Image (cartoon, rainbow, N blue to C red; front, top):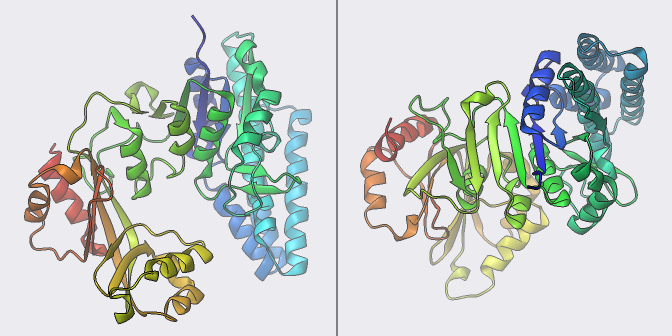
Length: 455
């Protein structure tokens, strides 16, 4: 029987310190992972972003404080893993590289997206070196003949040059995976690499955007033709809703790709929204579990599932805005929606939900869009623009939602005293979403969970 090829991805909390790394390595060993993708250690990406801002806008002394914090944190993990001076040397080289880039930003008083990507890449490059050692420590303790080998993700994960949110080039990645990783299917080598980062064809470091480590793992799983992708985090799988909002939330044993994609897109923090795209393309089952408590099991995300409830889960996306564009010129005319979508496309802003009437269009966006004053002024050139903020988007995720009589009545009966600002239904049989005041989000989620899922 052919041995399954498993890709395991570990998040930042799973990389938190030496003990976390060794615990994660034991999980990887037990699961027989052949390729391991890791995030930066918990909090490090934020530190690197803060470093870049400080180097650009503040004194060099303040930047050095953050550099020192990053260095001390990672060298402590190295000491706790009892790494030899020779193995610590690559870490020191990365610290020097980080200092050099930061000093350049400080001298120029400018941190471009290209520079920021290079600075942020240091986090994953540091953690993956440390985790390679942790993996080898665990392999030696288990008296295994296997050994862990560090792989620079940039050797295989080629992207375009959209710094800050680069797009992977699938065909190039598959060819490079064949070149660099075909050995993992018939050897004792376990490769350890970085999530989140890639490089352009001309060798410039890129990142896939925040949360991109999950996406990296899925891209590489597709690239090597993996049988299973595992996402290991600090919670045991996907829950029916955010347990921090609803104490009755419970684990989901399985969920379809389409349901999980909707859930991720509309606010669930467990998966990066784009993560599932390569897995869906290649029908690779995804397992989501806790590296801290692997015995608790987790959630399987698959193309086809046995159980298809009307409402599987619900999500709350806070800090939303509602933009309403109104003009009489929209009545009986064509091309108005094209104008709208062209403006959003030009500004590279994603729309979540949209509804239309005879003379107006309403759409939902993250409130960070308010910072884009040019976007709003461009929209005002051809329509009256009304912006409402402090809103939240509630989504019910399930099956056959747009063909089930009485669903809307049950929803709105349970929140009859709460004003609903916008409803979006019909585009997907897996999602019913609507907007409410931001502060009412937790109450609405609790009521809906009680109505549709219960304890």
